[in-house]
Length: 469
Image (cartoon, rainbow, N blue to C red; front, side, top):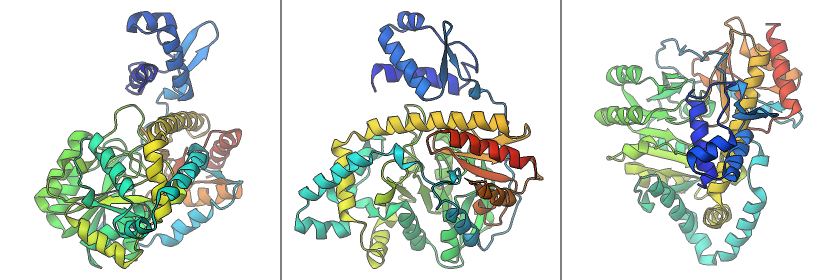
């Protein structure tokens, strides 16, 4: 990182940790320059960056101050999952109705599962597609269908290495997005009727996979900040014949929770003790706020138990549908199953992303994307505090682009979903994130699109509708 980015990150960390509180004045340009031994222009660049991230604001003739939205006016959601028996999963119809609500471009996309295409370098990716295709030989097109594009595998393995994980390229299986990889992995380690431990609330697509494969869900509660409840998981592993776990250890969808390094290590030791494989869904790995990338549970895996799945869909190229699996001891079985189903993701799409990772400035794009998402989160939090009831509870994740909102218990989020859709606003109601359709008074909201007057009106509309419920 450049020096101004390093300094900006130091100030941002103080704000996120509460050392610098809402409304508090941060050091003047002159003070910061003298104290840190950097030029005034470097300080200005850092403060401009922090403004763009939505963390500070300038006041005429007064200096720079921490934005008011940093104040925790709305409390954090509680862990609300009621104990349940292993359950058959039936959420697809409800999930499809939510997805259908996003087809109209005029709808405010708070229910979207993807960030705005405006945040991605689509033009530069087109250039990489052209370059990648020119470099492909006819033999390579066929060879890469089975093994995956060699340069792409090399670039992915390199990013693992930079994160401290020595991963053999032979362990990588390139897939049609992370979801195909997760599907294949689950099929490799389970049979119909088996029990799978999942988070609750959980991403609705994981519930749909269990439903399709006729697997039963064992719901493990998730704390809004600390992640999956390891005590409950321990009890369930000791009393139930769980065959696999499917967890997001970082920026979990929909809560945005992230396990600490110590809790990730403890989770792995628990899995290792019971010899239960884990599907680590890590599609939001690159969307952390700050400068320190979190290590996945895969970093502690010394027995090949963790099947690490990710993709470029959430951070670079949604439409390219290029993901991968680091399959550990299951890599060969996953690769064979992929050849029996879809054979290969698009080789041109793989070549395009490989070229972009090598020449397109991927890390520069990611920094810009994270800054945009953090600013958009601040705008949505500020709007929630203006328009939602004072008893509302809301998450403040350190990355990603989702907020989990817990309304007063009398609020029916399914009814709110329909009322809001009639007013041109989409959202994701809580029951689609549970195998047993809990979280009736909760919703997931996306701040993955640039904040506009339409976004502000959408939040105001939700606040108005809440007074009617």
